[in-house]
Image (cartoon, rainbow, N blue to C red; front, side, top):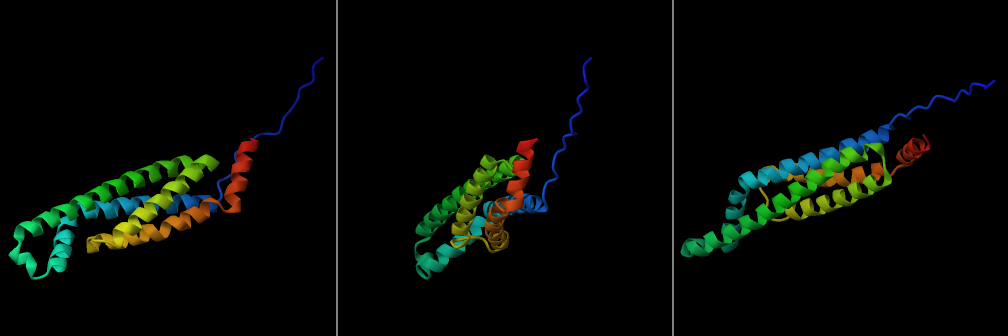
Length: 166
């Protein structure tokens, strides 16, 4: 006669609030970066022209071709930074979805891209940048290190360990 063995039911531990906060913060940083860089793409030429005119001063009216050349160069720089920022923010959003399971590799990659994105945004915000794009950019820079901190607090590590145990 065989005996019936009963095992304890397995359950998936609930995600800690700290992990939810980390995911929300990193997603907000990614979205705000995309918003800010989108505003740069739409209004960057005005900011570039104003910066060039401020730099050249009275010489701007004497050398219109030089002014246009400088504005084009500044606009190319702004567009390149904006597209790079959008790409990094897209990776942050994808990694945020993957990091919901609190895997160590996903959290590490998310941390790396949050830092890269914050540094790129910080460089952009402190240079020629449209005024309407500065607020979302600064908020994204502030949120990124907060998300990194939240990703590695002890409750997230315990949740990861509990998930691996099941």
